[in-house]
Length: 151
Image (cartoon, rainbow, N blue to C red; front, side):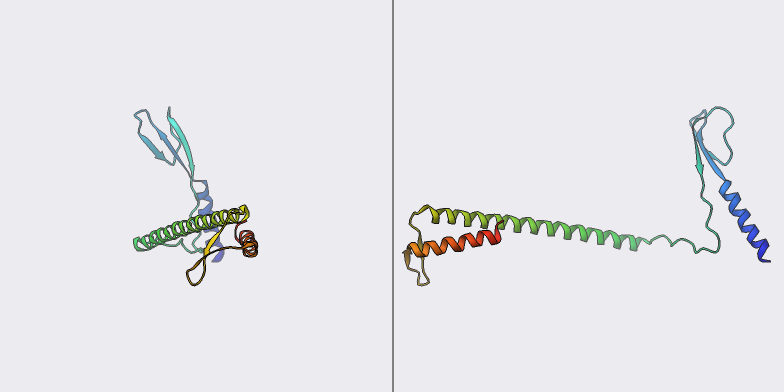
């Protein structure tokens, strides 16, 4: 009993594998699709090989996604695109802020190294001018900040 069923499955798959579909345009520019080759003059003949249907023992393909599933996937893709754009914007703003900070440090270092008088405000709100030792400390501190954060 198993042998005839197996033979029938093999025969059916062999027949299906041999099936071919032809597509062409006839004299009236009508597209014709047939399992037999055209007879007579035709334009744009195309042979289409059909795939054999899956054997009965294999499970059928997953059912088509419902509209709700496709909508949910679409919304998920939209949210991912928004998140990626927001992340990119945040990175650009952070990079711009870092460039501005580094440029400010470089200007401050140039003014310290120029020898001109540097006036600062202390914790009490009083203004005073940096002396040579404070200037040297500020130069060392600013160079370290530049090396650490502004490559």
